[in-house]
Structures are given as structure tokens and as C-alpha cells.
Image 1 (cartoon, rainbow, N blue to C red):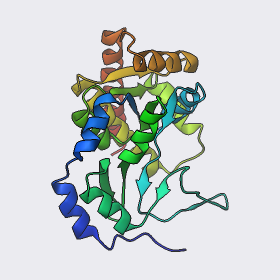
Image 2: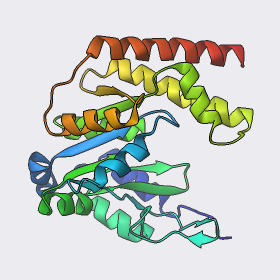
Image 3: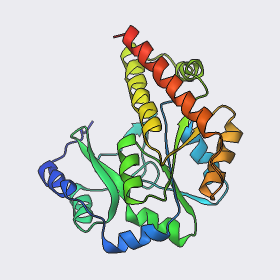
Image 4: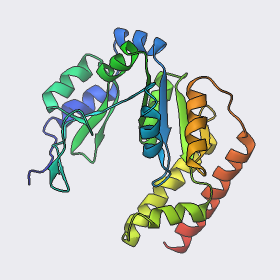
Amino acid sequence: MESNTLTLKDQFESVLANYNISEDGQKLLLNLRMVLLNGPSASGRNTIIDQLIKTGEYHKIVSDTTRLPRYNDGIKEVSGQSYWFRSEEEVLDDLRKGEFLEAEIIHNQQVSGISLRELKTAYEDNKIAITDVEIGGFKNIIAYKPDTVGVIVLPPSFDAWMERLNSRGKMPETEVLNRLKTGQRIFKEALGMGSIKIVVNDVFTQAVAEIDSLAHGGEYLEKDSKYKLAETLLAQTTAFLNNHS
């Protein structure tokens, strides 16, 4: 099996350190409708996105990556589905032209990011661009485009979250703890980012409907109870991690 390497790492670091979106890209962002989802593992954000795509009103953003396609259950990933698989030279050239919304070096092995090409497709099709991103990219994109509808999807309780994690199959304890540490960071961000919305995925259909409403300019309801939940999840997750350190 071929391994991922990043042969142009120094050049990527240089261009990303001073990255700016092209003027055409900035104009595109002014008129684009976009929804970003984030949330801890097993919060259901990807299932929510898939449900919204079925309405025909959304365009699912497919990120570019320099990593090699993988095999899942013996089937090789296809470019344009999970990712657009591109060479380092192609991605680096587009970054130098400002043709990405955001991009980052991952594990010192690959560069992945959202190309403006994907956003242009959403705009030309008159659809709402939607994707899930890691919390770092989530914050960066909202900084570039403050009118982005940024949503953090939360489980209804710590116990429900743990049950959902465990339902995915037995995981090593280290993996469970790593997912809880990521969740801990997300809960902190949910409390610290005043521009984001919190949606609780208790009843799936209601969570989908709420995000769809927010995407269309609907009112953000029950703020206080949602921030209280984020506080509770943060406290319980921190206590769990302290007890298993």
C-alpha cells in the first residue's frame, strides 16, 4: 500500500502562512449561501447533511485533498465523492492563485481544503453550500464569511452521546478518550463563539428541520437552554477525562 507523503511541505507552509482569497473568490462569497456543521463524533451531523441534500436545495461541498485514494471494504475511493484527489502541484498552484476558501496541512502528510470551484458550482445552481468541517476550519471560514450559518450539533445528554459512540462498535479506550477530548474542545467553542448556532440532535427530524430553517433565515430559538446543555456536556466530559487520565 502506498503511503501519503507531502513532498512540497515547505512551500505549502509558506503559502498558507500568508494566504488570501482571490478578489473573484471574495466577490463570490458575498452572494453565496453557506451552512457549516460541526459537532462531536456520533452527533449525527453527516446524516443531517445527507438528509438536507435530499431536499434538492443544498449542494454538498466536496473538499480537495493531496492524499491518495483509500480502499473502503475493498472498494477504492472515487474522485468527486469523498474528496477530489489532486496532485500537490495542482493544489499548491490554486493556493497561490487564492482559489481556496480554506486549506490546512493534516498530520504533516497531506493538504486538504475547500476549493472555490465547489462554491461556484453551488452558486450557479442556486443552492445552499453545505459541509461539515473540523473546528479549526469552521472558525476560519466564519472569519472570512461572517454571514455563514455555522451550526454545532450536540447530543441531548452525555449519556446519550456515550451510548451513540458505543453503538458504533467496540473501540479501544484510547480512541474513545481521543473523541471525548475533541468533543471537549467543541463544547468550549460552542460556548465561546457568539456567532454560531447550537442545534440539539435529540429527535433527528426536528434537528434537520431546525437547521433547514436557520439556513433560510429562520429565528434561532431556545438559546439559553442550548448553551446550558453545552456547559453541562463540557463539565461531564471534563470529569470523565479527569477520571480516566
